[in-house]
Image (cartoon, rainbow, N blue to C red; front, side, top):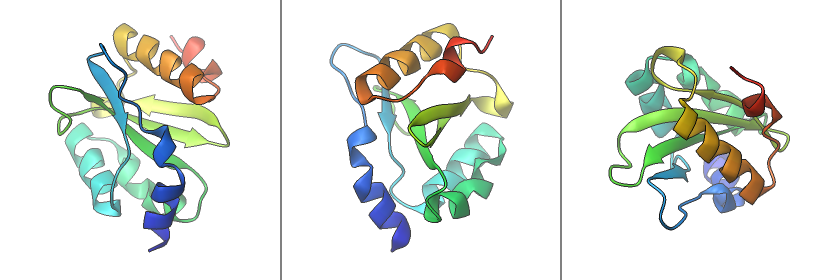
Length: 118
């Protein structure tokens, strides 16, 4: 129940701009985060309790064409995008990074982490 409330409070962070091939979606339930970690072979499944406790928010970068295919997991904390990882902890590619910076600007999120992450 607490998870659903947190997601409801943050639903404005979903992002599907026109004429873009990427989008940001919000997990609907804790199992979505667990599946994301499994699909991308990284540790985001261990973040479910952090989301429930309000310590961070986990969002998913997906293709508009197939939003079921995991691309990049995004961690937001205190209004900052503090982490973004793809399969096996890869860094976002250039197109993903540019999209996430645009997303952050649109949603009022600090993207300093992305701007200096090489």
